[in-house]
Amino acid sequence: MTTSKRDYYEVLGVARDATPEDLKKAFRQQALKFHPDRNKEADASDRFKEVNEAYQVLTDPQRKAQYDQFGHAGVNGQAGRGFDGFEGFGGFGDIFDSFFGGSSRQTSNKGVDLEFQINVSFRDAAFGVARELELTRMELCKRCDGKRAEPGTDVIECSTCHGEGKVRRTQRTFFGQFQQVTACPTCQGEGQQIKTACKQCSGRGAERKTRKIEVQIPAGVEHGTKLLIHGEGEAGGKGIRNGDLYVHIGVQRDKVFSRRGNDVLMTAEVNMVLAALGGIINVETLEGSADIDINPGTQSGSVNRIKGAGIPHMGAADRRGDQLVELKVITPSKLDDHQTQLLQDLAESFGLERVSENSGAAHGLFDRFKDAFRSETGSS
Ligand SMILES: [Zn+2]
Ligand SMILES: [Zn+2]
Image (cartoon, rainbow, N blue to C red; front, side, top):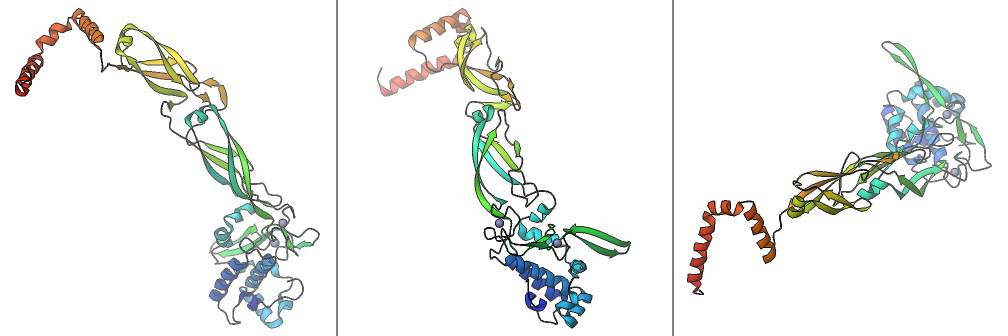
């Protein structure tokens, strides 16, 4: 493209009587074919620009006429005027968005953000944990430092925007004439074109790298928290800041604990005798175990609080929630003879024996069945 220019019709692969529709179709095809993000050949970016230039000229009726009559000499030095040619194209942005992976946004302020999910256990979420995240992202090419040109070769002023990086296009509407300034599509706002593409990155200025990033998950993190790690997204290009990395935290359920705010909730079983008499039980905590006092006469459903045994506040780890222990009074289902006797005595002291007899139609019923059973098997 530096010395003898190829014929614009040939570049787009269309006949000289191609309709605007044909041109648009051919341009899309060729632009996709040679876009440096997809095409790794060294001359892809030059070919891409060539396609771009051909399309600009051939879709501008005035410049097309000049080109048809005088060839390249007819349109030399006028490339900057051609952007009315993109009118009705549906915006140059949409074709870029569709195959750049959204990198047309990069020309505005920063590289593409990345998002990942990390799942941690309930306890790791409570106290924080460091995790390694392996990610693949675009990084500035080390060889050309993002400049896209092979080191030592020329970088020339963009012929479309004359180094400005911006193009103006005038829109005539019913309400009047508007001027819109957009990033130059030829140089993507850089104002420069390269003569020889960098050998390592094929003139993209960036290359795909796999990196391990250590993510410090803070104590007290909640399920669904989104951590923002500045600058660890994709490279934005020379002079443009990197995208950011967002890490979504998933917190797994715990078999003992659940969470409410910064408090942890759990249930502990208390033998009914202990619940009646009072005493001490040992319960699991996030960091081990703790003894809690059971008051005499404790009811099922009552809650004991262990101060400060809950989850640290995110960003203020010295402040912690409490552990709330819901007590569930358990009735023993297996008693030995001695225990049965003790409970019968206890029942008697509460006057329950009498109540049991009064409502004890079932008792008598059982005795009758018992007799019936014995006579049937003849084992009495
Ligand atoms: Zn490079
Ligand atoms: Zn330009």
